[in-house]
Image (cartoon, rainbow, N blue to C red; front, side):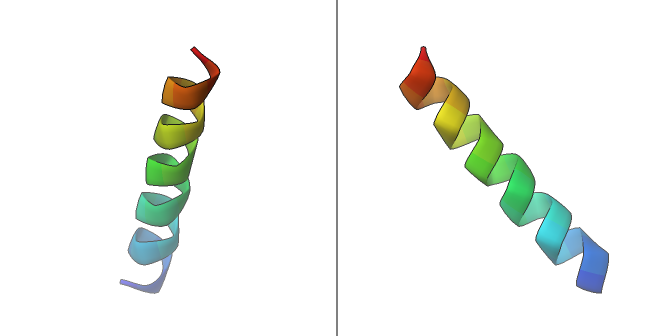
Length: 22
């Protein structure tokens, strides 16, 4: 579950960045 947490955080962050960029 160590990688899952990081992947989830990165995915969420990228999603937020993408939303802000657009």
